[in-house]
Image (cartoon, rainbow, N blue to C red; front, side):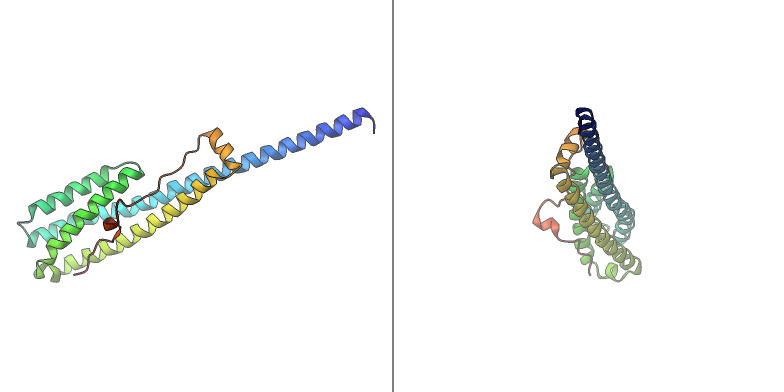
Length: 191
């Protein structure tokens, strides 16, 4: 083989290797974009369920107010916690606000426990069932979100994807975590 033919072959091999490396890099970049979008979608699923929860709370408070009028402090705490949760932004702030709201709802249900007529109220029972269902959906959405975040974060840390992630500014996503063990228990809505 003459030197010119060897140079052309070597140049062609180098171009093919560069094209393959570029295709691999593009594939890793697109995979990271898809994973990041799955994380965003998973968080939006939590958000949908939280909005449903927020819509149920005023009706629940009004129903309990009809029976337990002297429990004003509890109603105000639930209302304030709901407003804080609605206004929260970011995963960590949202999780903290939800923890506060869950605690306030526990107090509301503790108040309701003391009123047998309220527990027998059909409207209250229906709201209680809807809230229980919504809490389950929130739990599933949080689990899906955290699984998606784990997959995304793992992908960001793996070689050679970590190189692409660093070049294009991909950042780790936050988990939706509960603050302490007492708050990990579901809201008890059984009467």
